[in-house]
Amino acid sequence: MRSWRGHGGGAVGVVLAVVLIGCAGDRWPDPPPLDRASYEAQYQQWLEQRRAVAAAAARLIGVWPLPEGETSFGSDATLPIVLPVPPAPARAGAFRRVADKITVLPATGTALRWEDGAPVTGPTEVQGILALGSLRLLVEDVGETYPSEQDWRVAARFVAFDAPKSIEVGDVRGGIQYFVAPGELLFRVRGHDLRLTALTEPEGLEFFLMFKDETNQSSTYSGYRVLFASAVAAGAWTVLDFNFAANPPCAYSPYTLCPLAPKENRLAVAVTAGEKRFARRKE
Image 1 (cartoon, rainbow, N blue to C red):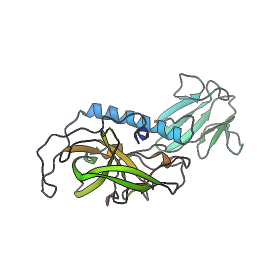
Image 2 (image 1 turned 90 degrees about the horizontal axis):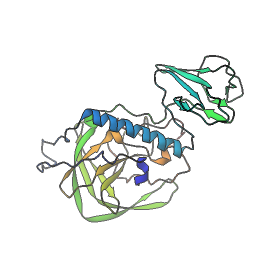
Image 3 (image 1 turned 90 degrees about the vertical axis):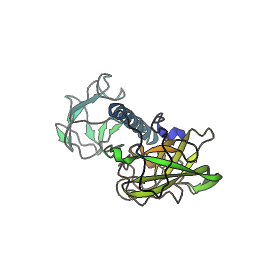
Image 4 (image 1 turned 60 degrees about the vertical axis):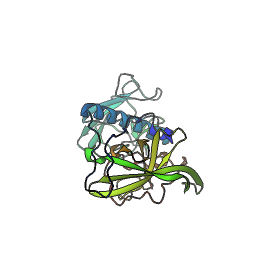
């Protein structure tokens, strides 16, 4: 489970020390305050890690963002997009982004073509797959996320089962996988009182959650997303930060094996936070 993180995110969850409040009460604790600059730096690091996970799972050689303006590409190690050599020349060209419009500008003498073999002879709006020798360059949304919003960072109270339960869930290949569920996390988000069954690993340092929500048929992966939170004792509080809700590996490639979310972990709200659907994968 831990490898799904993409080498990070361990600091997302923090433990809350607050007076215990009944779930049915009108009061609900806020998560502890944080330094906004540090949080944004952590969030940007997480985004980079998620791009790396997408690239590895989809067997890509790289995933690069395209900010506004021009982004050069080629084999020169100083360029924003560094391609293998051969076949890429030192500078093969550049992508120019203006809002949602992306144009490719091939460098003089670069044999840049569309995948069907037609040459790219000048500045051209990107509307397909580009070919540079054996390389293929695909421009689309990869690892896109919802904007980070602090009201998706919520306090959650851990309600332990009388004894940890062994639960079985299906997987994407039709098999069965087994997990240990120590209890549930109860939380309130945007006026809804919700709960998720929490899973744990033997060392018990984190809760692992697989959940579905109302965005799965529109903007997020149709299967589910995953989330981690710091493990706490029964009755104590932790933090669920849905801004860090991530796609499992099977969202990127059919050649991965993923469990499915427990049936009870379907949230009757649209969680408009975290990672969106991976556009390259057809579902």
